[in-house]
Length: 308
Image 1: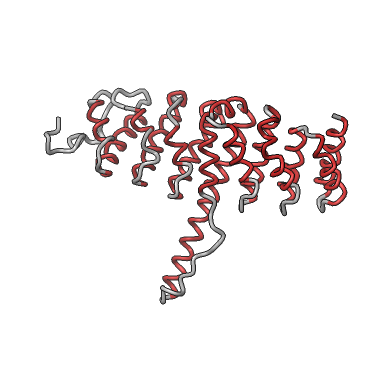
Image 2: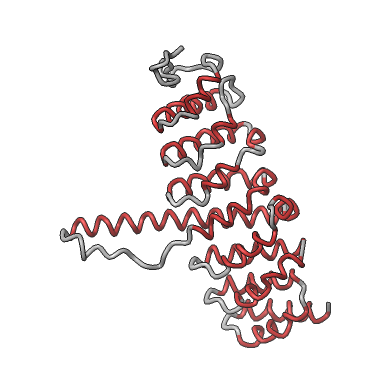
């Protein structure tokens, strides 16, 4: 056992540890340490245990699950990696233990957000009910991380052309990772609202906040996110039209989005909402939209709403 002056687990080699070799209290002490290096060591050990046996003695999953949104990015990434190892064999063990991953979905550190999104994307395919309680946090994280359309100007304070180019390239790559992370999270939200809409609405403290956040995302700078938000609202509307009626104006506005696939999804969502008052607007789209497919589904949906 370590002495009072030694950090927890200082005498344990993660590369050769086996389940049952370590005291769980020592692992918990490491994960709760004020030192990021000690927390990282604790997580390194947990990852080794999880890869050997997801039910390993000494693996304090609840403590690991609190760390994906850690102030230290390396700690957060390592914690998500441990949970990913658990998800490979025993995804049910993560039931009720995804709060930290959901919080990390709104991280301003792009690699943390992307890693969290990837894990949630894996889970939602087979276990949407595990992710459903966290859809409110995911959508709020999406809103909080919309990238600025402005690009950094380095010419004013960086003289060397090659250095400026390196900085510009770094920004471009980081923006691409942010886009990928946000689109993955948006698709997770769609999957949850499609497969478990009641659970998604029941799980959030304020379903109005979830719907409002999705409504705001219909204007997102990324058309992929905007289209996914429209889709999610359409799935929720099929379950609780009253809840989605709060943002009906957002769906009507999406009928004029510059991307045809967003407009088409808005037509479908309004059909699921079932409000006959939307029929005249849809009839106008059926006459005026530049895309033949959008015109066709708008005409069908308008007729459906008028008949209803």
